[in-house]
Length: 86
Image (tube, rainbow, N blue to C red):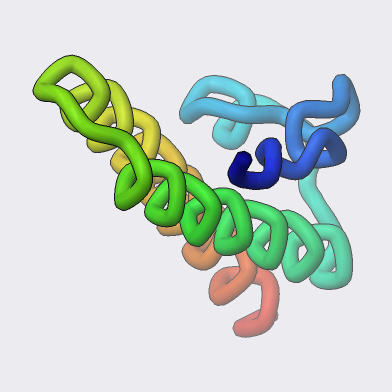
C-alpha cells in the first residue's frame, strides 16, 4: 500500500486553499519553505498513487487532487518569492 499524505500538511495550523492563503496571516520564509516541501511531497505521493490505481474515476480524482496541490504550491512559491524580495 502506498504511503498516506503527510498528516502535518492538513493540520489546523496549515491553511489550504486559495482563500486561506490569501486571507491568512503572513508566513515566515522558514514556514513557507516547510509548506512548499510538504506540498511537493504530497504531489509526489499523489503521482505514485495515480500510477498504482486504475479506472477513469480514479484518474479524474487523482488529476483533481494533483492540480489542487500544484495550485497550492504555486501560491506558496509566489509568497516566498515576494518575501525574499523585501
